[in-house]
Length: 206
View 1 (cartoon, rainbow, N blue to C red):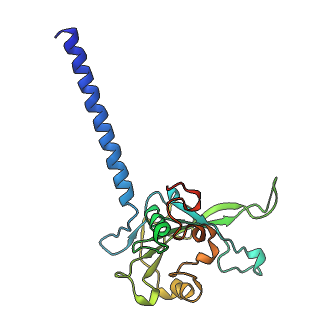
View 2 (cartoon, one colour):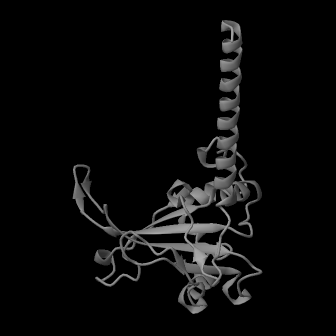
View 3 (cartoon, rainbow, N blue to C red):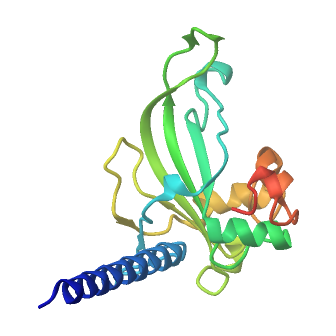
């Protein structure tokens, strides 16, 4: 084989490798996007979605024991995320699409003072939950939503879980949620994004 032939062969191999790498990247991105749809096992249990911490953060409400007579119903930080596909839909339409998932990770209150001053700071992780909208799967009595708890404890969280009884969560959402079973009144990021288009909430369309 001549030197020129070897050079052509090396360029061809490099081109094939580059094309394969690009194709693989596109496949991984497509697969990741599809993960924004809820998945269930054969027993009808929701499979805990991967990568929820990479979803769009919408807020972290806190009702600590110290401000609620020592017995708050929800004394943890609730860090709430919406799946990116539903975020895009909400920005464009101002509606929560069928299939919307909200992920909620619970964190105990840790220190109450820091160099910045007195306050409430995150402690240990304490649980993970999902709210899922699917009007065909869930009862109208729950507004077409269901709520799943993957454990109230530190990681690792459960891999799968069944929906909680409607009375356990839906009743509160039905009575007090501002919009479609969602407490949007407490999430300024959602309020700013609603129907605002691609540039909502300073995302630059992402």
